[in-house]
Length: 371
Picture 1 (cartoon, rainbow, N blue to C red):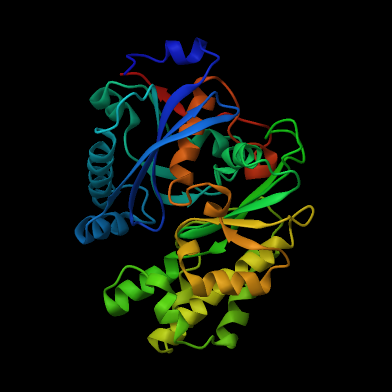
Picture 2 (tube, helix red, strand yellow):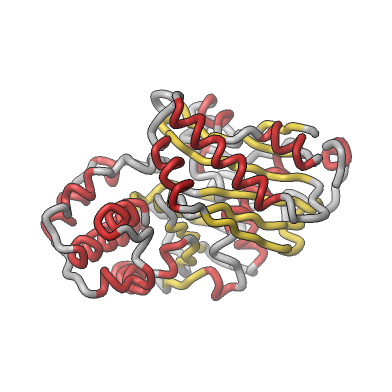
């Protein structure tokens, strides 16, 4: 491993970058190697996953929505320990892209908080680490999210997409990226439009954890037995968020009242209704696309839910498929994205632009910490 970032900054060729991501669904830590020059994807490398224990998940969940205090400190310790565990076995990484864990996100009020100390990781792993990816974007008036779109642009090129395509990430919160792969670069005007579609897995996961003590609806089995409560769905779609013009972003708990809307329903009907809310949010979001995409490629945990995928297929006007259909890894796409973004930060390239976060001009976020 390299003891500094000088070689990366001066080099023009391919970098072995290791990205690591812990998302709002609070399932665990994804890590993935990516070989890239910060523009094109050369190849994909090894991947790893480290799940959170029930105790760890509870500690991190207790810090959600908080900006400081003992719960934040406790969550930070869990995050740093878990990330060190998943990163240590990797060999050959020249650079690490460390997202950390988002505990709070309110760009128009307080900013954005991702816990985890990248400088500590750099010292512990003897490898340069890029971290704190979102703060610079927020400081320049951006939403600070989503940040994967620049990587989605590279993915669209990598799979040989000729016309517009949408990448739909269904984690705790849903977000989509509309990509025009014919654009010169991701920051070019008209290349990208990205924004959060609404809640995805988080409300359903929280409901099932509270009611049944299970972390998620495996295979959509619970939702498949239920009926959608259309009154609750209509109330959900009346939320002002859906009428806002993108770019726009959400905090994990911005739609916490969704669970209240289904509180009187059976487990199955509640699960079916929350799943339908996720799909309906995506259908609303698709109306903002500059031109209709040729297809929607789904990444994140939601693609494993056949009930959700069927709802999307029925409500959208184009083919819907998991990203595996084009040779990508939907479990690791976000970790790969932060490997890609780390190389861009190290080389002084932008990581977000007006079309992805609403930031005033293309900006390169991230702090580079050397060992």
